[in-house]
Image (cartoon, rainbow, N blue to C red; front, side, top):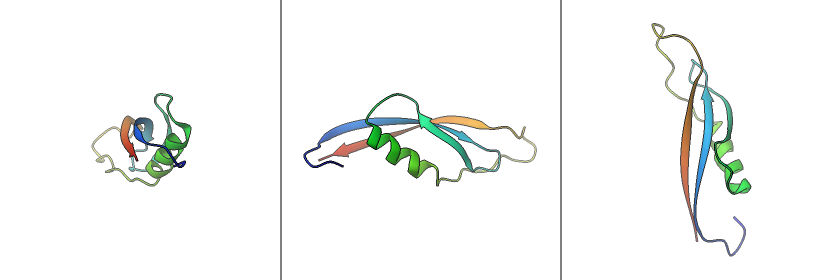
Length: 72
């Protein structure tokens, strides 16, 4: 993070998850610090969620993931 930055930032990322648990897409759920949004979205793209059971409808799921950054 740029030198001299401190404080807290809450970043919310809208995430779409495929039935197999892979992340299809990410986007900011609310505008905030662009640099922190990009860092959070980059990390979430590597996540894997638990796949849906075969007995469940095989459709995309969406969620909002909140990150709290503490800068000092």
